[in-house]
Length: 504
Ligand code: UD1
Ligand code: CA
Image 1: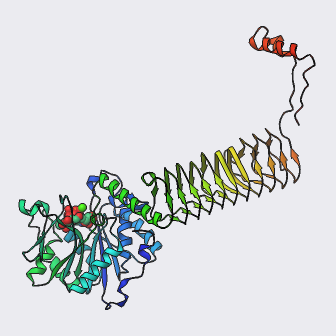
Image 2: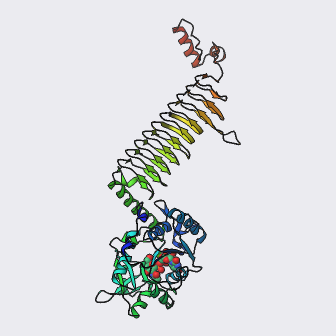
Image 3: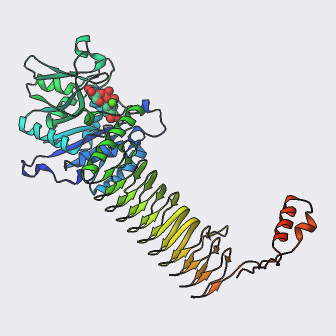
């Protein structure tokens, strides 16, 4: 389930070439989610449940992969189309119009595959997100080596409520599966459960599905009945016990969604800590599956890294930072920041309290400081935007300094325009750059200026009203006030006239 898991080559390369087909069941309604979103598209660690399941199935490098869709089929199919492109492999879909049971769902999946299919059919569920390719490969290996007609993945759990129970004879041989609702009190005590993941001989499966009946408490076609049908035909049926019950746990409601999400996150954190990342407080750090971290990265408390964010060697993120689809280069520091689609160069610093929006590119050794918002902004090497500033639709050269409280006025109410500031420029505090406008290399602008015209290289631009002092105004217009008294006292203590300072 970790990054790169599905990219591993198949372990079947040395095995006899037998066809492996995978069917992922994903038609269920997910009623207990109580959601307008199909259950299969609820996410943990940044990926929809169905994507976790499909990536695991794809990781065994099967000859074909079919997902059985029903509820929310259009939205789920759309996601699978995108995923097929990412995985660079075909993903077929079959539609189960009515959810008549797991046996019926597998029959729908089989109808998408070649008639007269031979080899092995691997069945898994779209709502079991922690199941990994390694476990599926283990099930296929066990199935092949044992010569079973059916090999089922099971687990021993503390609370088997809701699951089908594994029935074994006195010799411990698997004889069948009984659903909770059909179980006797004695059978209900069994703690070995059916995970719902199986390897079937393809011909046995096709034949047995035709023999299923709805003669059970739920009136459904139970896939589980294939085991007893195989047994009755004198075929071998076996089980592989999964030592880690988390891997076979499914999501039926939002409590399970949160629990499995937390467990997956815990495993991702362990992976990265073992790979050389310091995570100060693993209880408050959340990572997506596709995040990539380099050696000696430090993640401080309250960090969420989402959507393919990558962090280079020795960079520090946090505390209290959320980055989605960002790239942070080695040695950079990003503190109390919300970032999306931004690139932070080597040894650059960001925050505290910065908002990086898509298209932000801060080059090496640059600074985006406190209460600064950036969007579609390229900020050159060593350039600093330290305080209280909005930089939207701008290109700033290298080694420039943007004065505090500057606004890049990019929007005229109809269209967005671009501002260009050169290298080694020094712009004054509280400027507005009314785009489109350009400030040349080495130019200065005066504090408080509203820059509406281009500034040539090396010039000083002053664009504001000249200061005028009206002496004695308070004494005339606000006589007797505290201000007047303070002024009189100050003037009495200062016999010389107050020099009128004319700002440049
Ligand atoms: C099933 C098994 C049970 C096992 C449990 C593991 C049967 C009869 N029972 O229980 O032994 O312990 O899984 O979780 O197989 N689905 C469809 N179409 C359907 C019905 C289900 O696609 O008509 C899909 C669901 O979307 C889900 C999966 O199959 O992904 C399992 O369905 P669910 O109803 O949760 O399983 P149970 O039948 O309760
Ligand atoms: Ca279930």
